[in-house]
Image (tube, rainbow, N blue to C red; front, side, top):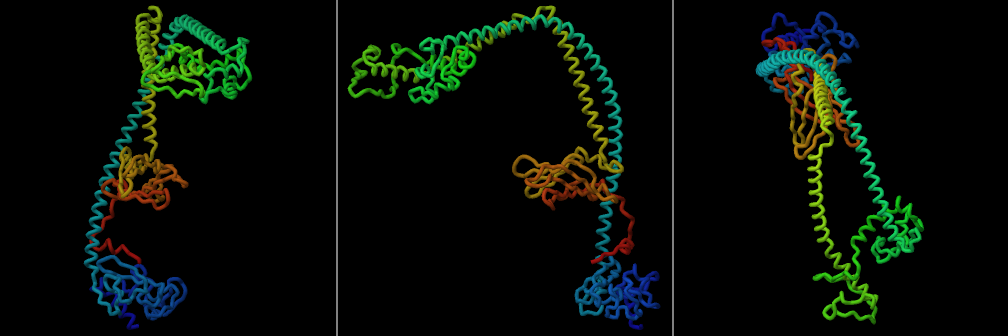
Length: 560
């Protein structure tokens, strides 16, 4: 008993004079549990597992299952030793660390029976901790003052938005009235215009129908002429044989028109009559037919081109062809020898093909000049010849002016409605219990790591973009406040971002901590496609509790 009391007195007086208000307790017992350790009564295990004489407390033998009878020794593996640490923060350590030769408590109370040369450093550590705590408290106080200004600004903006909404509603009502008036004026102006234009519309429709009829007749005449040209025997039916006689339809340019090529232009039929040719056949044959007609030159008019060699002539072995230096080709009679005739034709077609590009360029240039002149003349005629008579033109002008005024009035209404809807949506958002977060809307904050630039726009979106390259990835749109019930405004959730490849849609969880400025501190991806933003802002700073001297540490306790 005497030994136990000496332990108690040692624990109570260790490090200085006993304070009057301090309760004597066995070594390793925290102040909060001192009432359970009364030396005048038997000790009851804190887990209710048994009752032992008080002399068995701290006797280096574990009697209670929870180890509560050995708070000052290492006998129980599941027990805890409380470091008083006067001048600093008390600390709980596992009982296994008592007298293990390592200084765990800053007051060296855990190594009372070991050879460890522990020094009491609680005063120095406590002083440094108090200085740091004072600094943090000062920062929190500064953040709290900034939060109050954010609340004031947020409430001011909310009030301004409410006033603006009322003003816009009044303007919208007035604009809608003006639009209704302009619409009525427009209707009145369009009635006489409509009646006056019906006459001109009927004339224009008649002219259009006449032009279409003339064009149809022209196309039909052209088709009939082509049909007559292609119908070799004049029996009113085009056949495969007749098309095979025309090199025009040699699609693959192998020197002859096959039956398959001929049937292609006959819609896979053996023949085609005039009516079918006019309705469908001519549309298919027309391009190649007209091209062939434009390219064709009778053989007697062909003259070899200088500087170009025609394709080699294929002649029979016994056929003699005079050289260019002996005889001029245009003086030969093609009817005297078929091979000579084919040679002349080959020379003519070769010359024509060699000069074709130049001729086409000249023709296109002439056509463009002609088209430009024609357009200029048409424009001049349009300017010189008014479309309507003077009376009708006045009606059209009045109606056009009325329509323009109505369009302007309608545009103003739509602009007001859009602005009003935007403000109303803003007012529906939750900016904190005191509007402290409202000032964050409209701002964006960035954080850059080794690969990406992250941007968070509160109440709008969160995005990611590569430092090298273009484009951005939407991590989420503003969703809701997602903090716990006791601190709901400490977390913001952004959902429905771009979908990951073979994965879920991206999302961003923004956790807010107190700071003197609104700033992104870090961005990580703890799970695939789930991003964690850490952000400081004065909006979450609360008023720090008053603390001075050692009082702030006496109420603190750390467990390891």
